Length: 166
Image (cartoon, rainbow, N blue to C red; front, top):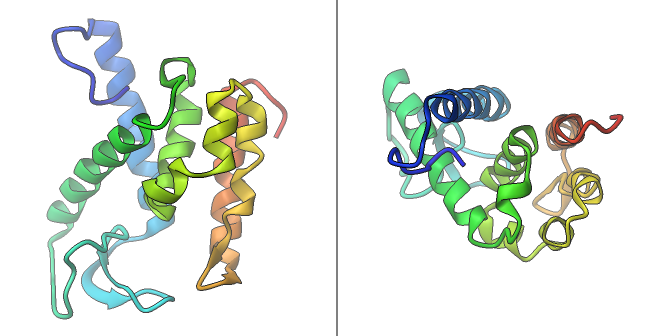
């Protein structure tokens, strides 16, 4: 969706792609929060910037611009990985896609691709897939208020993209 080839993108498509990426960066970045110095998250994983965990070591530091670039790059990577398990990717409205990429960014694409949510999306049951999001509100085996709030927001974005009541 956002990573489409420039050969295939029309002027209107580029605008839509740019708008979807801007929404994804704003939405995901807002939920992840920005910390430019490495810290341990609530389950003890070293984390930096907007929730980046891969290769993060104690003492790592990044500028805001580096974190912003990292987030855009990671969003594209998570979208590509999620697309590998979504059989109906082209049918998913942009707002729903942003919600799903946000969720996958947080839980990992491995877990996302093995989920009932993706199975429902692949069956074309998009609203039912959106309603699965609140189930993903745990870290370290316990319910986390921030994850509950994030999943509610993702579900609302997901359903709104489908024209469904939230």
